[in-house]
Image (cartoon, rainbow, N blue to C red; front, side, top):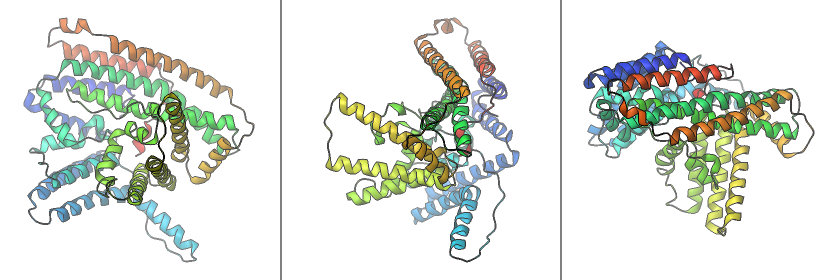
Length: 471
């Protein structure tokens, strides 16, 4: 059930109406049921697995909390179980294939078994939420008292598939808002859903075919330099509009129930340094890696060489989190090296302030980000090398007519999206306050459904999934 589908519009409207009209004591339980229905529309057996993992981690949380001795060991054992589940589903075949290739290079033969498993949707996201839950309890936080509240945290349908990665200390207390949702937050939720749909359906899905066409052509012929840059610029904006659009819809859907989910993006393409970019891009993941990988390794509190090591390890793990493939590992290592070089530069060279430095920092950062996206989007390292060659060594090529048309449509859609966003932000919805309280949920539900229907009808007929669903 995709966010950019009519089925999700119906599901969200019905769930919202049922939850809002139900007695306050039932609402948490109804959200749990709705979340499992949402997940089961993709796979009932993996919904059952999700239930088992939620039960297991709820029990793990109390086990860690009550461990008076060897708490760290108990925590690591519990976290290892979650990592083992993630490893079997996501990394086993990658590990086996890599080891097999290495052994064959040395002239030996080894054929360990591969597993024929479908990667459960959102497993990387909810595994990180489980780990955060267990580690924070070991650090002194109290576990969630009731299983229903923990279950909503673990399986909440707007954020379950592709985040943002929630912190239970923020999310669980906000469940009290289910008894009396804030109308202003619900209105903002409607705005976020509309903006997210515009980003995904009208922008990302228009830019996607341009990027796909470039990489498809790369498989059969060398790209021209202009083609290569067009391809990567299209992908750069596609992934931003796609992922931030998903996040907007997820946050908006949660807000309709009175639940606030923190932003996951803060204008990343306005960043003026590489560190600034990672404070603005996929904030929930970058902050998770900081708190549960970088700082435990020692962070920046130790010597400069150890700080650089910690940056490299953190970003390699971040790259591997995105996918079981070497180009993701190299992408993570690329960012680790870039951040390490920037840290060295800060230690030994101080740039003067001023507009020139700011513009230079912005331009340099955006070029580094764009080169990083080559490693992220390429299917393998050979494809990445070919794209780098096309971008860095000038050669002739032709931009196809369809690409030019697609780019024009994307530019127009961007202008429409910006206008829509500014218009909604300036609107005060004064008519809303004149509606009787029992009517407000119905009107807002109809408005959400119409927004979804209109956006899907206006969209290019691609039916594209969100990029981050694969992680």
